[in-house]
Amino acid sequence: MDFLRPASWEEALAAKAEHPTAVPIAGGTDVMVEINFDHRRPDVLLDLNRIGELHDWEVGEDTVRLGASVSYTRIIENLRSVLPGLATASHTVASPQIRNRGGVGGNLGCASPAGDAHPALLASGCEVEVASVRGTRMIPIDEFYVGVKRNALAPDELIRAIHLPRADGPQQFSKVGTRNAMVIAVCAFGIALHPSTRTVRTGIGSAAPTPIRAKAAEEFLAAALEEGGFWDNGKIIPPAVARQFAELVSGAANPIDDVRGSASYRRHALGVMARRTLGWTWDEYRGNERSARCA
Amino acid sequence: MRVTFTVNGREQEADDVWEGESLLYVLRERMGLPGSKNACEQGECGSCTVRLDDVPVCSCLVAAGQVQGREVVTVEGLADQARERGGRATDGTTLDQAKGWQAKPHGAQAAQPGQLAPIQQAFIDAGAVQCGFCTPGLLVAADELLERNSSPTDADIREALSGNLCRCTGYEKILDAVRLAAARQDEVV
Ligand SMILES: Cc1cc2nc3c(=O)[nH]c(=O)nc-3n(C[C@H](O)[C@H](O)[C@H](O)COP(=O)(O)OP(=O)(O)OC[C@H]3O[C@@H](n4cnc5c(N)ncnc54)[C@H](O)[C@@H]3O)c2cc1C
Image (tube, rainbow over all chains, first blue to last red; front, side, top):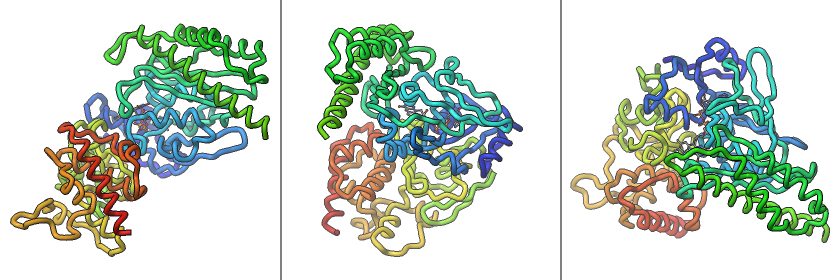
């Protein structure tokens, strides 16, 4: 086995071009488990820890450019106000030790349907900046997950950063598991209200071969909110609308039975999480609107 | 490959390290520091917790090559680190000192003052040690908590220790120990 330690991003891209089968290692919280248990014996490990810019983020006027290796701990500590959905999801990942090492780049690298960042990323409508010696391209998050634990990266590409729109409204994330810490989601749900475009986006985790959006539910809700003038009048969403939204979220899932839960439980739990998180985000939206009007 | 890094304030070198090897393996098997425990090897149990550039991590999930040039503090270096925090200059803990480390030195009645970090003394005083396997990881995690938050709430303590499992299920005493160390820390200030 070779252990490559590029000192710069350019060196890392050159190394990946030369060794397309090299396995990048960032926090190592997925890769090292596989190596420790002999599930994986890469010819080459490509250490990304030395590349400073992967650990940096920039908060712009409209978007946040989040370096691939920014740890979950840093996200929680520094980016909660601009990326509330991702920060909430980050807080549910594993334990402090794991959150100190792991980050969104590694979550995307694995592309596990159970990765907790994915529902928040899908709901935010972000883009993934990937690069190779051939150049840089932006992959919309909707096109990133291509199969079970497969993503849209070419063999010579690395993830440089994630470009997330700054939250323009309330965002929530909810996850079902058997305890508070150290739990792989039985299923998870993320929601983001986008008042500036009067849209709602969602993300579902652990309930289909890949992380997915509940598009029919999003469209239904956007139409219902528009029709009732809810964005302007800030009224409570009628229970029938919330129920229908929850059912459509449930219906979008394509879960399996496994050791963590049955398919029917996952569908049920998703409906419950959809209804609750919609309630939480909408309450926050109404609160903000009210205080904005009073001011 | 060769890996050179700082362990408990002293520069150390490990040779013939396999590229897929973990920091935990290097510490235990190559440097002879068995304080960091090897249990689950998948980050679930926290018994291998060390500080890497100050941050608590599971050493079983850090590739040895990733620590080149960086600083690691293990449970064997906690007392020394606590002395340093107290404003006393130290020159780190040598491997031999670390290997000879005992909570209760043979024949002695009790540890000499300063021989243990306050968090270690609190674990003993509160009866927070049963089989002892989870203890090193808990000590490192609890020490880091008290360094950044001198009067943690119970929720803070639970959160900070949520990555450390005790299978004797002695959590209540462990929480007591952290509260005790925090209270003593407050008295000193
Ligand atoms: C005990 C434990 C509990 C966990 N609990 C959770 C949980 O609750 N929720 C959750 O979502 N995850 C969980 N995980 C999984 C893991 O922590 C996350 O997936 C984390 O985001 C991985 O990040 P990392 O930097 O450690 O990735 P690494 O292990 O370094 O890499 C993961 C994958 O991504 C690739 N990769 C990394 N960086 C890049 C890059 N820049 N470009 C291209 N490819 C890259 C690697 O080659 C590898 O295939 C847990 C893991 C452990 C050990």
